[in-house]
Length: 111
Length: 114
Image (cartoon, rainbow over the protein chains, first blue to last red):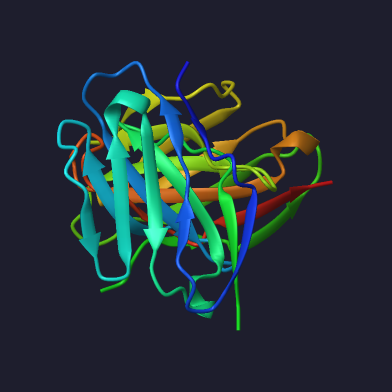
């Protein structure tokens, strides 16, 4: 089965704290892409980062960084120095032609 | 540059009725996918259209059908509505990258079936 597990249902942090969102996935595909999206209350999903399955180099983009480990099928996402505007539901999604979404992690950043 | 636009924003229908939701993709995108998101859940893939053909389909009954027009816009039709069809319906557009490019999502249509 193809599925995504985001074990953290809800996380609350105080502004400027770092926060890591966990993601474990299962996929039948040997080559795929991994994405993180956020969904603010307005409803649309906003693209954050993309990683391909054959490159495990971890990267940093601004306040975002990610840790991809294919051996454990994990793709964790970190926000550095969180801000109130980061409050949203975050989804990890492996993809070939379609996204497989989990139930998401609700992040609340408190001022 | 307008992003993905969906209409209507909200809709209330009665059980057994039919509904049509519309989506205009981001400029330059030719692939449209539809997702259903129940309250508190992640989006679930319904189907994807490319070159006016349904290219892939998720585990949804035949009551869910769609169409893509020559200008790449798309419609999602749901027949014989059930209470369980109440959800946020999201449209996503992308270039023809078969999953390796990011998709852009609209704000969705919130469908309530009573």
